[in-house]
Amino acid sequence: MSTRVPLSDDFVNGDVSFWFRSLGAPEAGTPLDGDRDADVVIVGGGYTGLWTAYYLKKADPALRVVVLEKEFAGYGASGRNGGWLVGELAGTPERYARTHGDDAARRFQRVMFETVDEVVAVARDERIDADVVKGGVTTVATNAAQERRLHELVAHARHWGWTEDDLRLLEPEERERRLRVGGAVGAVWSPHCARVQPAKLVRGLAETVRGLGVEVFERTPVTGIAPRTARTPYGTVRADYVIRATEGFTAEMRQYHRAWLPMNSSMIVTEPLGGLWDEIGWEGCELLGDLAHYYMYAQRTADGRIAFGGRGKPYLYGSRVDDRGRTHAWTVEALWELLTQMFPAVRASRVAHAWSGVLGVPRDWCATVHVDHATGIGWAGGYTGHGVSAANLAGRTLRDLVLREETELVSLPWVDRKVRSWEIEPLRWIGVHAMYDLYRRADARERAGLGRTSVLARLADSITGR
Image 1 (cartoon, rainbow, N blue to C red):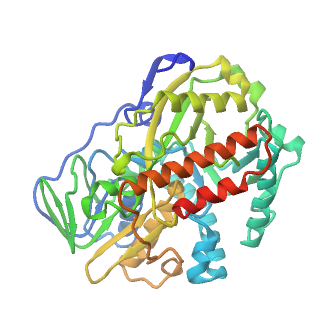
Image 2 (image 1 turned 90 degrees about the vertical axis):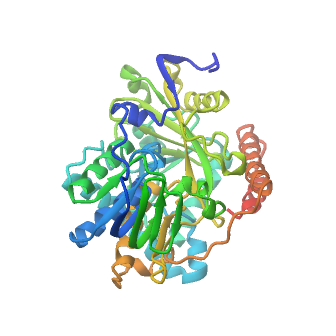
C-alpha cells in the first residue's frame, strides 16, 4: 500500500469488509447435504434472498423455504455497502414512466420512501441491533458546477413529486451546523435515509429467518438454475419457485453472464476520530453524498469513524469479480485525498481498513423484479447501489408474486421489466471504462473551475445508456 496514505498498525485490505471485521469473521454454516424438496428455493443469501424468505414465512409459516448461499449470509454487497438505507429509486423515474406513466413512477417513489421506515420497523420489532439512525441524507456541492446541479436536482425532484418535506435546500448556517465540509458551496437535505451497519443488519436478518424455520445452507454454490430446480455440487433442490437473488455475482452464472454487469465500488474507514469531531460536526449521523459525476458516499459510524466510499476500478474485464474485496492502492489514495479535502481534520487520523464489493447494473440502469409462474423462475436485483432499501421492497414484491396476491406492489413499474443484455467483450469493458474516464475528466475540469462539463457528462451517459 502507498506510503502517501497513513495506515493504522492493524490495517486490513479486503477480506470482505470492515463491517464484518468489527463483528468477528463469521464462520460459514452447514452446506446442503443432499437433494431437497421445497416450496421456494432462493439462490443467494444477501438482503434480497433473506428479505424474500422473511416475508414469505411471515405470510405463510407452513411454506418450506430454502436459501442457498455460496459463502456465508451477507458475503456480497449486503455486507460491504456504505450503510445507506435510502429512499431513492433504483433507476430513473423517466425510464419507469416511459413504460408505465408519470403517476406510476411517482407512486413508486412514495413506496420507496415508505420502505425506509419498513426496514427500520422490522429491525426494531425483530430486535436486530444494526446501529440504525434515521438522520436523513445531506448532499453537498463543492464547486460552482455542482451547485448548479444541486438546483437542477431540486427542480427534477419537484417534478417527480418530492415536496419541501422530502427534499430542501439548506441555508449556509444550517449546512455548517449539520456538518462542516471543506469547500462546500451548497447542500440539500432529505429525511428519507437511515444509517445502518450493513453486516449487523444482514446477520440479524439471517438469524431471524432461521428462527422462522427457513433452512439456510452456506458454502453451497448453485451451478445451474432450471424450471423448478436449483443444482449444486451437494444436491439438487426442487421447488415450485426458484428465486435468483445473486445481484453483483449474477455474472458468475454462465446462463446469466450478460444480464447484470458487476460494478465495483470501494470503501475506506478511518480510526475512531475522538476529539476531531469538534471540527467536523456531524452530530445528527445523517448520510453524506456529493454532486460529482464520480460521486462519493459516507457515514459517521456508531463507533465514531468515517466510512467513505466511491468508485475504484469500476469494472474488471469479462465481468470478473475479486470476491475477497482487495482494493488497489491508487483507489485508497483517491478516497483518502477526497476525504481529507472534505474534512481536513481527518489528516490527523489513519485508514484502518479498505475493501471493495460489486453491485449489479442492468443495461438500462433500472432494477427489476420478476416471477414466471410457468417455469417457477423468478429474480430481483440490479439495484445500481440502492440495494439496502430496494432489496426489502423486492422481497415484499416477490412474496406477493409467488403467492399470487394482487397488491399495489405487484403493479409497480419495476415488475416484469424487459431489459436487453449487456454487450459481449471487449465492448463491455471499453464502454464502462470510457464512461468513467469521461466522468473523471468532467470532475477534474469542474474542480479547476473550467466551466460547464455537460457535454462530457452527456457523452459518458450515452455510452452505456445510463
